[in-house]
Image (tube, rainbow over all chains, first blue to last red):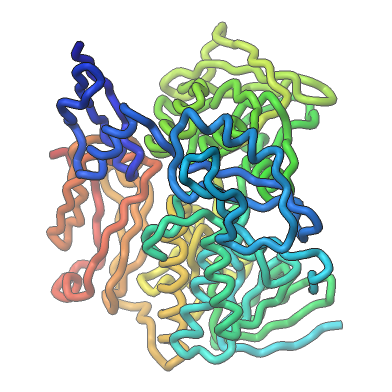
Length: 127
Length: 422
């Protein structure tokens, strides 16, 4: 069975409208992209869409109550709700440094969750 | 107690533009640089709006790497600290006076008042959000109405959910990104409401912030009323016609407990204006030349206080550019006021920065169009320069680089920019 899927590219601000044609769920053509990254994105978007996930998680005895985090790589969209559930229950201890891994191998996806902000321990806060 | 302080360069504002300006000025050998901003210490809260913008998409130009807002800010803050910039924390620039040879800034803080006398100033005070009242949303003032920035600070700095059922007013990138943040944290986003017939933000954000979560985007629509007395209970939404006027009979009520106003941001220029700087009505920021110097000598502007940018990278770029100019005048360089070219806005051009070209240095031109078009050319008439553009949209700033050599032989006292059909 041949089907066409239209994909709006999110790689850059151009927002190309890309048409991906599949036969029996195999990509047979990609049209409308202006660059190679666009073609790769469209292929992945049709077969297994992925996104970088960002959220905040709770911090104990930090100078801010939460620390912002992101996945080190895009994760499949279908795992996002599950991933958020895991992260909602998580609490870490201050201090946290930018780049610290707060969850290793999230849901077995081979992707880490890393801190994107530093949060200091409250006792060390000076002004 | 008033403390008196002298410096070579004062920077008002510690967002991307101000931080990049302070760093660059120190690198160029400007001795004493003082930066004024409000966070309580030189740490994670410095960086303007960046620390609360926890999504990726920052820094591709400036750091050649995709970062989140707080990561971008922390890198610059570390440099500011390492390079010995003096930061006046918890401080608010409350007065600015300009005389021929120097600038006087009064910085007010809980620790007292600092009277700063500087040889040059970079004004990078950023922008403020437009409020519900500015976009004609009336009704009671129940709890649950926030600007996008307020909601973002609550969620992403302080871990507080502002509400559970949300309507976002405005589909610029900020509105789209906040819709996604709410959806990710488990809130129900009922709709994003946009006055214009097209989305305000980038297509990529419509896709990854709305379509990913099945959030409806209501175009050609406006919120006319917030319902509810103690807490928001809903909004009244109406369709608008081509003149953006409400069409009677199209009113509908969307139930929600939270309204997020993402109606755009405007440059904060009050202080500059009071000091006598000329303001451009099109940008809302000061009129500057290709040194990013305002009409006040040795006073430069950068970032969203100059013009609303799409990318933090451009704000940082302007900060560095203003710092180069400051270093130039502090080293005895002259910025000409005579024999300059005025930038004239032609067909489908809403704004352009800088507004004045001395031709003494290479320059970027930042341009915004009035309405979307496809397959057009950007024409700079006096230079005979043409740039083909497959797509132009008001949401996307066009940035053109002009070399000083290109301007050398041009006799006209103006540069006319227009968007022309192919």
